[in-house]
Length: 551
Ligand code: GLN
Image (cartoon, rainbow, N blue to C red; front, side):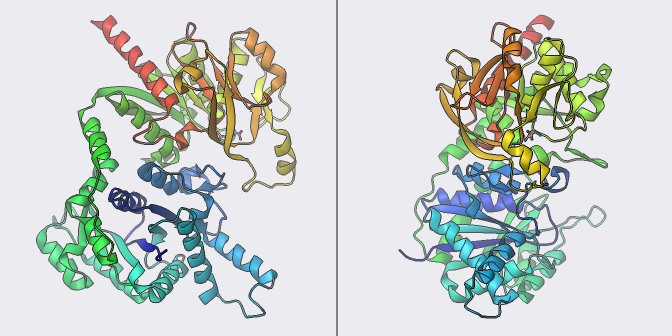
C-alpha cells in the first residue's frame, strides 16, 4: 500500500479560531471525494487525558467508544466524518512523554541517551501513523492544539517538520489564522497573520494553505498582500468567514475548490465530489420553522461576563440535529442551576417546550436541577436527563413521590439517609486511593430495553449500546419502592444489575426519560439520536398545544 498522506492543521494569531471545525471540514470534503479520512487531535498539556479537567476551563470532555476521555474536537471529527474515532487518535504531551519514559525503562532504546529531540517527535509521528493505519486512512488530518509561537506545542511542530522531511510528497500544512477588522480602523488587517507565518517559518514549516478566519470573506487586495508576504499563492488563501451554521463550512471551502487544490498537491486522483446529503442538511436547517424552546439546566456555562456553551457542545449539537430533523429551529435557553437553588425562582422554565438536565459532578447547583426536574415532571414538560440528570431525576422522584425526604446521592452526602444513588462497587476502592484519572465506568456498554417502553419505541430495538462516564449508579435496594410508585426501569445492563434508563409511562407524562449514559456522544448530523428525536417531538407537540389554547 502506498504511504498515506498527512495534513497538519495549525492555529495562528489566537486560540478559538475554529481549528477543530476547520480540520473536520477539510476531512469532510476529502471524504466526500471518495478518500478514506481520519483525524488526530494533539493537545499540548501534560494531562494524560481531558477527564480530570474542569469543563469551564477546557470545554466538554468527549468520550469515545473505547472509553477515552478526550478533547471536544474528537466529537467534531466524529460528527463531521460520521465515523467512530478511537483512543489512538488523541494524544497529549503527557501521553507522549509517558510512553517514551516507559519504553526507556524497558530498555527499548537499547542503551541510548533518550532525548527530547528526536525521541519525543518520533513517538508523535509513530502515534500519528498508528492512527492512520488503524483504519487504513488515505489521508490523516492532524490538528495541533494551541497557537504557533507558544512554547507548549513546539515539539509537535517539530514532529510535523520531521515527517515532512522524510516524506516531502505526503505532508501538507494548513495555517488557520485570524484576520481582525478593528472597528476604529475599518479595514481587515493582515499583519498578525504575516507574523504567525514568520513564526511557523522559524519552526521550519511553510504553510501550503492559509485559512483566513474573519467576520467576512477576504477580498482581493488582502489576498494579494498575504500571498506576497507569506510566500503562498493567492489561490492557496482560503476565506473562512464566520457562519451561524458550522455545517456550511465544508460547502464554503468547496466554493474555493479546497479539496481539489489539496488533492492536486498530493498528486491524488480528483474524484467527483458528493456533498449532496450535507447540502440537503444545510437546506433543511435554513428552511426550518421557528423555534422550539429548549431549556438546558447546567452550571458549566457562565464564566465572568460570558456564556460559553462549550462544556455542553455534544448535547447542544444533538438537540439541533433532532430539531432540524423535524424541520424546527432550536432555541436554546441557558438556565443556571445555581439560580434555581431557591425553587421560588423557576421563572424561565415555564416558557420552555422541553428540558434537558445534562451530566455533571459535585454539589453545586444540584438542588436547582432537582427543582427544575420536579417542575418538568409536575407540569408535564418533556424532560431528558443525561447521566447526572437521570440520577437527580431518581432522587427527585424518591423525595417528592415516594416521600423519602432524605433521598440523595452519596457523591455529595456519603451518609445520606436514603442513598438512592450510590457509588459503584468497583469505584469505591479507586476513590479511596484518590485514583481519579481514567477510572470511571467509561465508554461503550450494552443495555437491554423493556418491550413496550417509551425508549424501546424510540430505538426500535431492544438491545442497544451507549457510551458512559460515571462512578455512581442507581441503588437497587430502592428499585421496588420507586417502581411501585410508578417509575419504570425501562433499560438495564444485560445482567439486570445496573439501571440504565428510567421513564414515566406515556399515559402519565408526555416524555420523561432519564439515562445513565450519554446519548449525545453518538448523535450525528445526518443520524440524529432517537432519544433526542423523541424529546423534541414531544416538546413540539407541547408548543402546538399551547398555541392552540392561545388561539
Ligand atoms: N457525577 C455522576 C457520576 O459520577 C454523573 C456523572 C456524569 O454526569 N457524567 O456518576
